[in-house]
Image 1 (cartoon, rainbow, N blue to C red):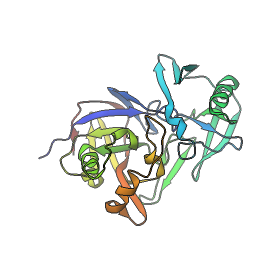
Image 2: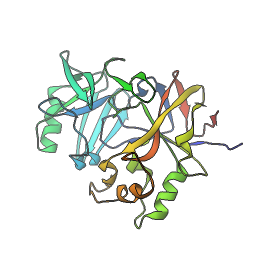
Image 3: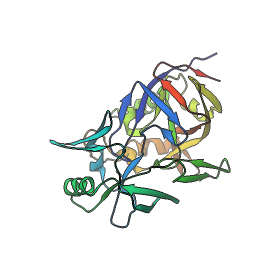
Length: 263
């Protein structure tokens, strides 16, 4: 029987900004603790991502005890994890209504100045403030501010096979996974059903459809045609280009790099 080991864990505190590799993470129903609990919204309270603003990949968050620090070029801004204004804001993440709260006027001003357009930094505070109905499962999931599902799992062989087809090699960071495991067959993670990491049980929801955002080089914020062009040649199913698989957890608990998947 194959052994699958967790090689990397990532969280993305602010939606569409750079991620943070961690050695351990607390799995919650909404996603990993601190994962995509914040996002930037425009003047109409619509979410902002790298799809339109690739430069967001150059903002690097860090978790410092009870604060989050964001570094962009030679600038830095810090705010408290529990910081927010009291007035709720009705926003949308794709088709899902989401109740969020502005972190502070100062935080919104800093991002507005650095990005060059008006925006607010907001957070989702309460479990259940955003729900996503998964049509394939006919199930409503409690989700953070991620695109659609709480977790993204990718196998190492999937990236290896893709890189063999690309002229310029890329890293796993293009695909913004939460959990990376070692595999021996490309895309075998698509076919997982129930599995357990540590004491946390997970269920596969569906393979993840990818968008133009994977063409943004997270090191430079330069957008080219790859890897989506190559992926579309061998990973296109029903007009979706698939890479990695969306999963959700059935209970909360800690998982660690080095944990073995149990089926």
